[in-house]
Image (cartoon, rainbow, N blue to C red; front, top):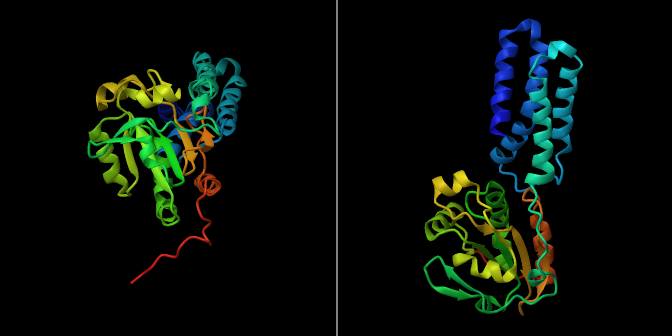
Length: 282
């Protein structure tokens, strides 16, 4: 994607410098720029999810490639590079965005979440999963602060936290990142989630949701993350720890909507909005 961005900028510069070949270079900018614009828009607008397949991006990139190919020899020697760019966008969509995960029975719907999973809370105390029974609970196993879609999803849930808490639910955020990153996260959202650290991915290993080498190398090296992380997983459990909803996405760009999470919490025993106690104001 970095190469695509460089090529898109180069094409735009050439389109300005070469009026006679402007159509060729504009087509090149569209071809290389479509996936970059998509990713930039997703990150800058803090989107928590995208469509499963980015057909609009493929269409734009393909249109740019077709426009260049239609120029025949005038398309120049960079035409194979444009074709490679379109192929790389397909690879990103159909391969790189996918985990290739096998759904874990340990976190499947109707399974019982083990009550002896051990975590460390933000204050350094040991917390077991059984300690959190008694209320409908949404468990979000996320990759880390470095993941923009994870952060966008947490931001969405934070916006609904007051409603969930008022109605008697709990939200638990679990990741393998170290304490400093978790404290940064807690300060960023200023919402009293239960922030838990899965040291050494011990709980994730038992649950079958580990993603070996799931942190990009540059991020791991520069921001201080371990290379292994967790596969994004969202569970909703009832008061007894029974899993009533399990989202084991195989595409890191696809996440459940907040309304889905609330609906599943209601299935787990959360009172409906009409039945929940009203907020008392002074």
